[in-house]
Each structure stands twice: as C-alpha cells, then as structure tokens.
Amino acid sequence: MFGDGVARGADVESLWRRDQGTRCEAKSCQTEEISTVEVAVQSHSSRDAGMQTDQSEESIQDLDLQKEAPVDYAGLLSFLQGVEDVVIKELNKNWISHAFDGFEVNWVDQNETVSCLHNLSYPEAQDQKLQVTSISWNATGSVVACSYGRLDDGDWSTEKSYVCTWNLDRRGLNPKCPDLVVDVPSSVMCLAFHPSQPSLIIGGLYSGEVLIWDTSRIEDPLIWRTGMTDDTHTDPVYQVDWLQDSKHSHHFQILSVSTDGKILVWQTERDGQLTLVEGFALVAQQIPRSMKLKKRTRGETAVGVTSLSFSHFDPSVFIIGMEGGYSLKCSTAVETAAVPRTGSSVPLKAPAQFAFSPHGGPVYCVSCSPFHRNLFLSGGTDGHVHLHSMLQAQPLISLQLSKKYLFSVRWSPVRPLVFAAATGEGEVQLFDFGKSSQKPAVSIKQASAQTPVYCIEFNIKQPQLLAAGDASGLLKIWQLSSDFIQQGPREMNHLEQLANEVTD
Amino acid sequence: MPLPLKGTCNGMLLTCSALVTAWAEVEETLKRIQAHKGVIGTIVVNAEGIPIRTTLDNSTTVQYAGLLHQLTMKARSTVRDIDPQNDLTFLRIRSKKHEIMVAPDKEYLLIVIQNPCE
Image (cartoon, chains in turn blue, orange):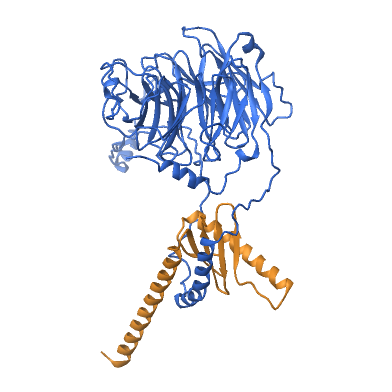
C-alpha cells in the first residue's frame, strides 16, 4: 500500500527581486565640492597711552574784534568828538603838572632795616668743614636749597657732600635740621631749581656730572644723571640751568657750563639718563677780538667758562664769563662749528659773537638785567664789578667793591637799579645806582673778614628775602628793608639813561 | 536799469561812503589821542564793558576794560548817591607808574593810559 517515496520539493522562484528591480531606479549622488576660503584673524595689540593737557599760561580771553556786534560808527564818532577835547586838555595838563612831584604813598608798613631771619646750617657738613657753594630758591619761593662742597680746594677730592633743602614757610622749621638731605658722592658746585615745577632741582658736580633730583621722593630723589660718558664734562660744572624749549613751552632741557670750555645742552630720557642734544665749545682762536684788546692767546686751547647768564629779553642771547677774564656775548642760533675736538657725539658749535674788555682776573659771575635788554654785570677776582652794555666793549661803569675777590653778582628782581654782590671779605653789598654810584647803599656783614661769602640769591616770589651762603657752611636768609622792594617811579628812566651812555 | 533799483543803488553807495568816513574819522581821532606825549594806550569800551577799539595787546585790554568799567560804574553811583542832581564827568586814577583817565558816556567809555614823566 504505502511505499517510501521521495517527492521532489516544490520550487517557487522568488519574484520579489524582480519586482523590486522593476520598482527601483538607478540613482547616484555625490557630495559637492567643499568650498574653502582662507581667512586670517589676529588679536589686537594695545598700548597704554597717557594724555595730559599742556601747562597753559594765563588764559587769555579771545578778543575777536571783527565778530563783535556791528559798531555804530556814527554814534562812536559823535562820542569821541565830544570827549576828545577834554581828554587832550587833561593829557597836556598832566604832562606839565608838578602837582605830584615827590608825592609818595605808603601802603605797607615800612621796614627800615635789614635783618637776619634765619641762620640755616647742617651740622654734619659743618663738621667736615664744607662750604656753601650754591643756593637756589624753588618755583614757589618757599623752599631754599643749598649745596655744600669746596671752592678753595684744587684737588680731585672724592669727599662726599650734601644738598640740603629747608621749607621756610613750615611752622616747625629747625635751622639745624634740613627737611631733605641728599648725599652726593662728589662736591656739588651749582644748583638750579626748575622754574615751574617746585620739586625738581639740578646739581652740577665737581666730577663733571650733572644730576637731577626730585625732592618730593623721599627714598631715592635721584631721577636723572649724565653718568660718566664721553660727552660728560671733564672739568667741574660751575653752572647749570633749565632751558625752555621754544617749541613746547612745558618741555625743558638742561644746560651745563664747565671750565673745560664746553656748554652742553642735555635732554631727559626715560631710562633716567641725560643725553646730549646740542653743545657749544669755546676755543681760543674762535673768540672774536675787538680792536682795543691786544692779548694774543695760543690757538686751540680750550677756554674755561665759569658763569653764564641768559638775556631775559631774547632767549637766544647769553653772556658768559671766562677764566681768562673776558666776558663774551654768545648766541644759541649760530651755525659755525667749533674746531673739532674728540669725543663728542653731537657736533659742537662756536657761539661767541662779541668780546668785552677783560677784568684783571677770572670772571666768576655774570648777570643780565631783567629790566633792560642791553645791560649786564660782571664780577671777578679783581674785586671790580663792571656794568656793561652789550653794544660796546668798554664797561659803562666800573666799581671796586672789594679788595679781595667777588664771588657772585645778582640783579634785584624788583628794583631795576639795585644789585647785590658777594665779596671775599664776608660782606654782601647792595648797590643802588639811584642813590650813589660810588659806594654801596647797604653793606651786610655776614661773617668775619676771613670767611668769604660765596653765593647769593634773591627770592623772586618774595622779593624781600635774600639768601647768602658763606665759607663757614652757614646759609643766612636776610630780610631787606622796604626801599629795596618797591620800585621807584622814575627808576626805569634812570636805567635807560645809564644804558644810553654808550660812547662812539 | 529800472529806476527804483538805480535809486536804491545810489542810496546804498551813499550809506557806504558815510560809513567809511565815520570809520576813518574814528581812527583819526584815536590816533590823535594816542600820539600825545606819554600816552601808553587807548581803549574804547562799549556799554557792556566789551572793548571795541584798542592800541594795546588782547590780554591787557580785556583786563583794563573789565576792571575800569566796573570802577566807573561804582564811581558814578557814588557821585549820584551823594547828590542825585550830579553826575560823573571824568575819572582819573593816579598810580606810581602812570595815570589812567576815563571819559564816560551813556554808550561808551574812553580809557587813556599816560605815563606823566616829569
């Protein structure tokens, strides 16, 4: 019945692929080309910058006459025609009137005598027997600084010295204890306070360096120095000063004068260094000679400069006093180069334009008058003071004030006819051309006859004060009497007359 | 040219020349005063204290004008306070160095500074 059998399986072909295939389409896809662009990005670099307004002078209101409301000329004319006669009559009457001759009014208490206000000293400097070499008043007139050193010593001493300041307006003023003492490694020969910033002061050293201190910094007042480079002076620096830059009125340069014959102008740099900007050199053969001077000097020797004074009326003109006894009129606006000498990074110019007749010894001080553009004084070791006009070589007046040396001469800042001189006999002599042209008006005895007075300075802000430093290390502040403070009514005319006595 | 325009043209020209004459005469008068012996400066100030003519520099002029205008007003009120029928005619200030003369008016002030050098 049943038998084994093998049945073939049933095959069903798959159709789905074919169906799939009929429903499918061939497609291809591809990504598009990726577009790239090169871009660079950089972070900013920034720098701190400071802005400051310029130090302005007195604010001047702008007066613009053109933009004013239109002036009614007819009305103005009628007004002027009405008053003209009256005014002219009064002007004429005034010119010939003697009503006010000799009429003087005293608004302030008159002080008849000269008295010593303070005796300032620094005990350590006095122990070392140092002398006062230079004095300077600061811009506000309340601080006086003095430097100690030696003026009679010819050696290259490495003795250290001091610069001391006292604030005279402070209540707790101790005459034996200065407010600030700066130790200096060498003798300081000259000082100069900044004309508008009350705390900056320059000092010129015996070693030829020039240093600037800031008295408001207690820890380390030294802020700029020249260092000992090839440009530095090789001889003691006898005078330093601040020079106002003609282009930027708040910018100042530093001037130094030394007996190596060079007058150098320095500029302050950021790293505390003073760099040389400009310079003048005096060489014997380049000194102009007028016909009356017969001295002949050897050609290229440098001539030592001991003092310098700028004219108050023309900032490019200055007078220098030299070791040879000559005073020279010089200008900063010269173009002639000095005879080349080695070792200077900036070309030096020869500034001399005119030579005046010499003193009988080195000139220690020159001072230009603040009231007349042509007058200046020079004093030297022959004990004479010469009043010169810049227009002629011979002095207008020559006075013998001392039998010893004259160390310093200064014009008074308020009275055109008065000047003060520091003598080797320990006296400060105040001379008034209006009173007598032969003998001093007042002679102040500062010290004994063996101690010369080395330096004097008037206080410009408080004109009754005169500071004088002598060889015993004492700095005395004198209060002058009232007639040295107030200008008389006809002083300027008298000064003009003196200046016009120029012969030939 | 139409007549009215010509007429105004002429009118304008006349005013112009009158103006120039007035201005020239003002300058002449001030020059005469300035030329007198010892005169340092001359300033004309208007009723508000603003200088309109001067021979000195700007800053000095502004200073003189402001200060003297105030002083003149004060002087005038002083005179009139004492006697209301009276009035200020002239003001002179004598100082050590020079003399300042002020001629006042309703609309203007003339300031002359002289150095009476005897």
